[in-house]
Image (cartoon, rainbow, N blue to C red; front, side, top):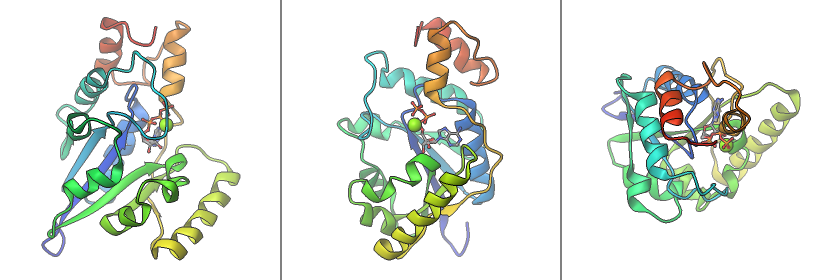
Length: 204
Ligand code: ATP
Ligand code: MG
């Protein structure tokens, strides 16, 4: 709480499955931005990618609940799944916005670079402070981030600030590939999520 304002974080994604990179990012986000509360919000239908038939939203939600269980100031929300349809971030932000709240939206680098094309991007920049985290290191991405921020400043009067973090270079795609090929994912996803994936025979 700063100047009577609740600081609320929003971290959306497909989370198919949620992995340790997401967990580290979320915890760092809470700490660095001094959030009062962080919502982890699995999308029902992500606007930007195809899901496999096996990517049941209820499995994705259950895995998020396991990954973030008992973590201080972090709650998993089913609001996008309950709303149904394509999950647009602007609708989620509208639902969370209040006079006495300051909203922060966390994305990884890849999503930071596309933010200007999201539905009602201008409204997104009005409703929240978007921030991003690195999830890889390469000078080429660094250059594109700088260019994008110039564009965002020009179009929306606001840049996407970086939240410093010790990133983990992991993706759900890589986790799914490993499981499919019978390779171990120990340490790359929380233990409870690893068990859940095995018990429900996901991504085989
Ligand atoms: P996929 O490979 O299926 O795209 P993903 O690992 O990118 O999965 P998403 O559910 O697409 O996971 O990502 C949700 C959000 O988390 C996005 O903003 C993405 O940029 C961010 N993110 C994903 N992985 C990491 C990571 N290792 N570190 C920091 N942020 C990440
Ligand atoms: Mg992704």
